Amino acid sequence: MNLDIHGGSCGHSCCLRVENLTVRIGNEPILSDVNLHVHCGQMVALIGPNGAGKSTLLKAILGQREYEGVIAFSQPGHRSQKPRIGYVPQSPAFDPSDPVSVSDLFACCLGKRPAFLGLGKPMRALVKECLERVHGVDLIDKRIGALSGGELQRVLLALALEPVPNILILDEPLSGVDVEGMETLMDMLDEIRKTYDLSILMTTHDFSMLPRYANQVVLIDRGVKIQGTAQEVLSSPEFAQAFHMKGGNP
Image (cartoon, rainbow, N blue to C red; front, side, top):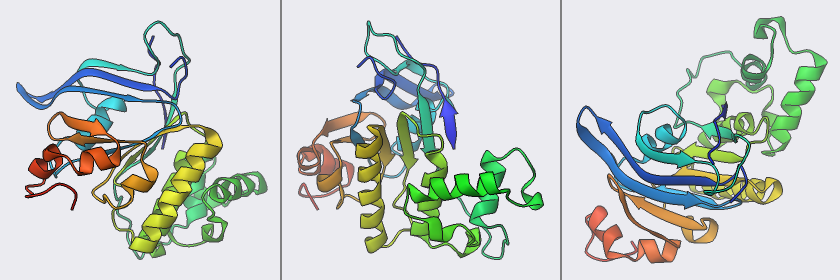
């Protein structure tokens, strides 16, 4: 999914700034006083226990939840064009018996003609180009329902990268992916970040990959508890408290 969001007042569209953000259900705050800054070219990981508000924060940034506070895509005093945001949602379910292929999915999302009419040469070439970005051209004719967890994430990532966004947001991209697939996917995200100089904001429950890939880790538990490097956050008392542990890093 690729979204256009209006820019705020880093003078680049890949910069994300959240200030004093609060999200409520009725009068009850489910996120309070969130402040964070995603710099251009950074990978930032949001972590926290279930129900901490990570996905809610992503939805607020995407304009899908009402909020109080500021979400802007540049530094104060700088003007920027509205950013293009690529979004990979959390674990969409597909029927294993569904005959829809990867190319059909791309045709529905990117094309102007009904998928049942088949892919013309220009569309098939575009789908191949998109899948090449995630080293997945071999998946083009595979049924969506037959994809492994890692393969499905690569397909959804390829969709989110067309056109190439300024900011890439992923909700639990490692969910349902085996250990080998996790490393492959994180290597791919790191390569994409460096190739296109885009910013990545992702949620995850897998902490083993964070020291190697994340520039910044933000611990969310109905608000920001601590943010810093992976080592700083994973060894902190705040992390231990959030996950009911006796020590820091698991």
